[in-house]
Image 1 (cartoon, one colour):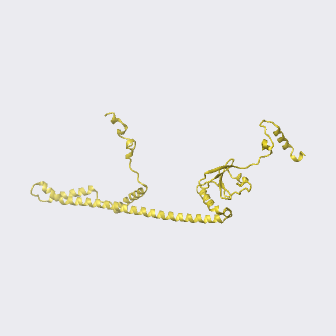
Image 2 (cartoon, rainbow, N blue to C red):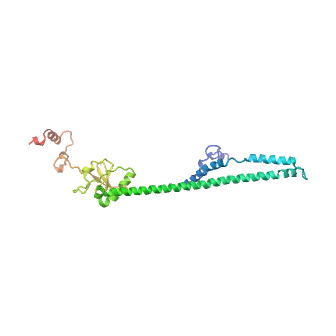
Length: 282
């Protein structure tokens, strides 16, 4: 038994919110409850100050003793001894003392009730006003968005996008809201490859999103770009930008070979071509 009482949970002092008694921590107020309780706590001292200080229990008790003593000193003895005489002398002062205590308690309850009523009313009024303002702000934001959407659809870019202009506008608004970098102008489609023009892609920084004239979205990568879903940003498939190989970049199948050694025929001809341009070698 003595060993059990030496456990930490039985030690005196320290925090009482640890271990097995952690569940006994004071309950945290809910969001709505905390608003009401704070406002009521703010109003109570204001109402008490406006009403003024009442008589303390000590003052009322001393007043009872003084009145009873005066009556006892002037009261004629009652048959039966001193105790009935004291009881008769203190009967009225005690009744007044108890009545004043009830009056003081009733007054405090009235102050608490008034503070609760005014606190709840003020919190509800503020909440209603806040909701009204939020509704007005949301309405103005929706009007602004519709106006911007109309301007976008009437702009040259929106006209070129056609039926995709609305979805592109919503995606760009989402990018602006989430601070996602994107290229503002739509890219043209190469008529031969049916893909985005490579030369335009090379001008876009890595990691920046862009879209083409059909309303499809992409993201720039180090080696090219990737097609993505506009809303989620999920990658669809990687696309490598096309780059035409130079004369010395051709493979064996294209008519040239490359020797990785430090000095070879290709490097010799490359150096010779730099020193003697083709116009002077005829």
